[in-house]
Image (cartoon, rainbow over all chains, first blue to last red; front, side, top):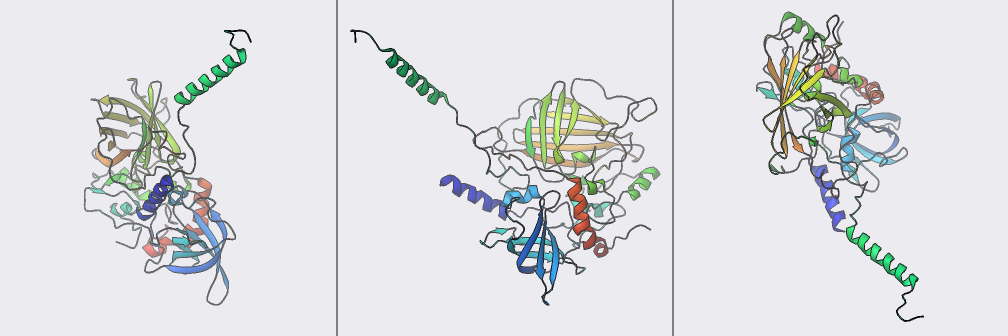
Length: 160
Length: 288
């Protein structure tokens, strides 16, 4: 019993840390103003792996038409530490997805969290992405946003 | 039964009981596998402190750190050849217009492997060599027997350049490992920003272990073909992976299976990266 409690506590702690897990990928393509909530969507496929895990699912829009969505989570190696394992979500599962939708209106997004029918949640709900570039100091943080510090500077996120 | 006679069966049973008792007393607990949470570079926890003095000339084991090294912003002036090469390297690997080799999981090579995706770093020993276990489950070979690196690498009659170059190392003092690497293939990038390096580059890594639990890196590039002076390109810092010496605490998997899978990377761009069209949002235009 003690070991189970300790494991649970560690799992919760790991879920809560909110580490910058997307340091290698910008979030500029996604609307970060608020998450889109898609309830009771039908999972069609899980592309479990690195560098990104993809969740493919069907959801009905306001008019009742089915849209085929593709949403990305972090790398499998990273999310597995939060309890989201390869077999945790299967095709046919009905889940609720909180995601940050693509700005161009395509059925694409970055997952904030997934809620399973039994109430388990994977993810914190936050949009994880680039941090602001740090170009005025001797050393920057080395993430995707560091490209902006080149002489010809390449913007990689919408936080500049 | 005759007086004083001990039945062989009794003797056998006694022997069996004694050996079972001895075995139970000497038995070690069997480590358990599965169901554990891997040691992950992304997990934040309180620093474990120094953990005692560092062993002499020994980094053996697994180290965990942030995904990326801190990258220098103070890059010296580049030669015209360096500037031209820099323009060709377009970073941001999951955008449509990038030509970062990472997009298709091409190996980083050196010097980039020392400063990009460095969350897991392992050291192991083979005869005359140190083996460095680096990001995406790749490895480097560091020759420690005093031999010099080959000469004339990449020149006619000389050995070929290699993606990870040729590395030779030596200890300075008790706790600092210095690695010199030459002959790195110039198709690889110096870092994720796309800074280039030539085949003539000399990379110096200094790994310092100030105490048992910490390891620090300073990576320097000396490349007169592309840069007007040598410079520090990145700094890394790792902590000792907790519990790796305790079979009861260490779990399988011990560390994350950190991979870059080409088929998954290509499918990612097809399903999400390209259609999400980050470049239109950031204003990066494709070259015409």
